[in-house]
Image (cartoon, rainbow, N blue to C red; front, side, top):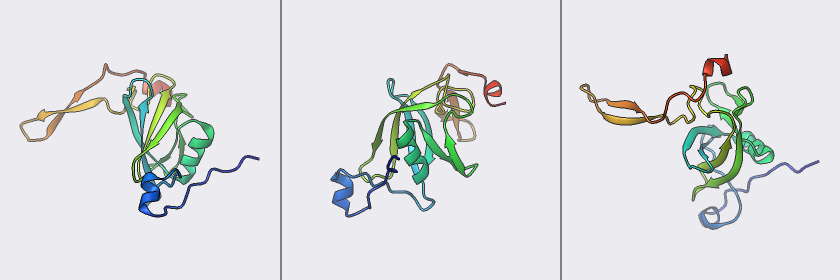
Length: 150
């Protein structure tokens, strides 16, 4: 039987900022933001959230597991689409309240809309109404989401 991964207590500030013990700071909803980036190109793929259970599952399995805020359930990325994210490295910021997951994206893309990345639009100049116009920042769909997700 393997030992379940534990997180260190959030002791004093110097221990959190300079120590060698992982003590993630979850928000009031029990979540921590996690941005997935391509391990080779450093392209941002997606932003999601993890709770303690999904973070432990990620560390144990070597694949990204998130908490779906909309469905209120654990979400193993790629379980239905096959577009799994294999963990290469996980980074945490200085106060351990955000994560960067360096991943190898399997399958055509990370985004449920069919794009390789969820960050497929950039902000352009404001239109006549003062609202910035979104512009494509990729080459279009990487896969047909209707055929993957039904």
